[in-house]
Amino acid sequence: MMAAKPWLLLPVETKAREFHAKLLLAAVAAEDGFEVLLGEQNAMLHQLRHLPRGLYIDKSIARSKTAHFRRLRQRGNRVAAWCEEGLVYRDKTSYLHERICPESLAEADLFFCWGAVQQQDVAENIDQGREKLVATGNPRFDLLRPGYRDLFAAEARALRERYGDFILINTNFARYNHFNGENFLIEVQRQRGAITTAEQEAFFVAWRDFLGELYRGFAAMLAPLAGAFPERKIILRPHPSENHGRWAEECRDLGNVEVVFEGNVVPWLIAGEVLIHNSCTTGLEGYLLDRPVIAYQPATSEVYDSYLPNVVSERARVPEQLVDCVRRALDGDGASGGAEGRAAAERYYAGIDGLLASERVLAAVHGIDLPVPERPGPTTSVARAASHVGGPARRLARQALRPQMAAYARQKFPGIEIGEVRAELRRLQSASGRFADVAAEPLAHRCYRIAA
Image 1 (tube, rainbow, N blue to C red):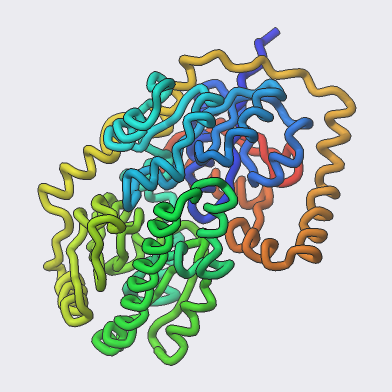
Image 2: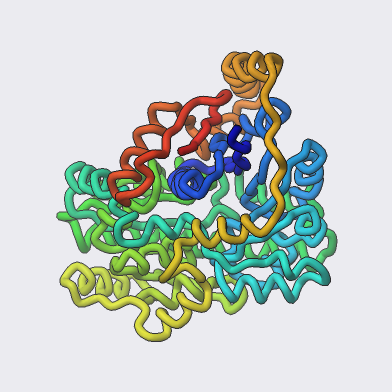
């Protein structure tokens, strides 16, 4: 009798950002002898007692995760994590205070760092657990490698057919322009204990106000940019947590500017002729995809600007300079990053060359003891079947009782069905030439088993 395979549990919170990367990690893990549960984070957590126990890989080790990790461990799971915000942070001190909690790390077996810089910064902030820090990179950036980026080739072609030649603007101002209002994230920080002093309050308020200045600077440059390139569509893609309707109002009178948020950002980066951003991870993603990248900086701050995505970009301070940078990029004369940008990218990101970040993650996972899966009994099977009724019922109740939060949840995770999982897996197989024996099947509500 074959021994049971260990399980990885891969929850997805923000679909556009995480789904394809975690599908790739799932496929690599399946080839490597794991079974994988891939699904919507909330659905997975609601059904946890009926799901296989294994290694749960979270997206954060913030203080809000400590009790969550303890519950996972009490149910027989092991815990690992990375930080989705850990590559690009505007201020090291605030990042460590807000995102790195030693108590949460104590409950985890591994923490996967984006690269040497984050690994060193986190190590300086903790007294114990440095051996858990592993510089692996992140599966999101595996999708930028030649071969794997072909996963998005058809979608990129479709975007070009839909919009023609277009300029892409990515915004990253959720601390000011949040879906739930300008003060929402400050209130969240108070509730989570990240703001406990007047000094901390002042820091976060100043950060919000700086991003408000950037927001207004971006809004003000839209008309000059649109006027300079009337023959091109300009696509403004907001951060998943931003108020997209507010941006639509800013663009209402600009005929060639459109606010669009859909799908993974990678096909948009591939399809667009040039990317405009400010301190955004997509600046580095565009750079690694060999696209022209411009950091627009109508305001600057030694505290709140992010070094990495701006250093790999051309930089512009006023609309006239931005228009000139865009025009040179469209003419094929724009250059991004140079030697300083390449050196910075290698310091901050571990997986530019060599093994995929997914493979580095799994190599580290092999070094820990994983729980033995339990054989599911009749009660478990019934509970999993019932989840297909209970899950939608919970969503309807949330929509009725808390419509604002339900709308925000839909913006971040609009849903996923087995047909989409299988279709994206086929595209991944075609793009990479790998994973021919890997398949997907439903296991519970919005949770899918990926295995060879």
